[in-house]
Structure formats: C-alpha cells, structure tokens
Length: 129
Figure 1 (spheres, rainbow, N blue to C red):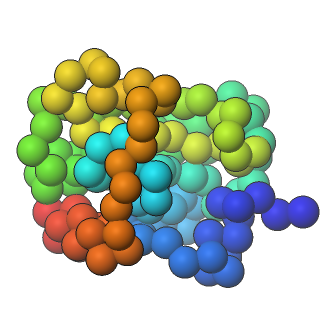
Figure 2: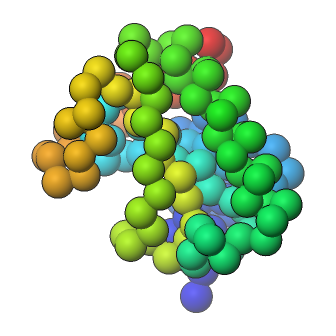
C-alpha cells in the first residue's frame, strides 16, 4: 500500500507545494512546529532515509538546502533546522523548520493550529522568496 507521502506525490492527497523536480517534492507540514515547516520527500517510496541509494541521498540534501534558502528568505528566523526522524510515516523525509531557539525543533511541543488559508499564504511566501 502506498504511503501517505506517496499519495501526496501522486496528487491523490492535496498539499501546499513549495518546490518540486523529477525526484523530490517539498511541501508544508500540515501540523507544523513553526510557520514555514516544510517536508522534503523523495518521489520514490523508500521507508528509511538511510536506505536511500548514494545518489538520492546526496541529491535530497542539495534539494533540501535550496528549499531551506527559500524558507530563510521568506520566514524570519535565525536558522532553518533539519530533522530526520522517520517514525511517523514509512517514507523517507526531511523536516526543515525555521528556528529562533533550539526548542523550536522539539517534536514533543504542541503543533501549531493553522488554517488551510494560512498554509496557502505561507506556501506562497516561500515559493516567491
């Protein structure tokens, strides 16, 4: 059965797309830790991040770096933090989270409650940055 992220990649589940190429998709997390929290996924379904082949592993990091630069231009932050956890969805992915403090990347914190309209506005801000 396809993962949630594979369904997003296929367009079966809507998302707020930030960037995309032939191999990767970046989209807003719908339960963000901070405004501008983006997920970067390979379009190829692989469960565990460190099972990605060498080319895909290096390429996803370059793609994520470019997305992080877009986030930095659009969302006031000190840095964009990176987290790879991989327990919640069986599809390799990278979290890019705008940070003011280290606690901003604490996944045990309550998630922001945002509307679809707020997500759409944030996505537009990042895409045009």
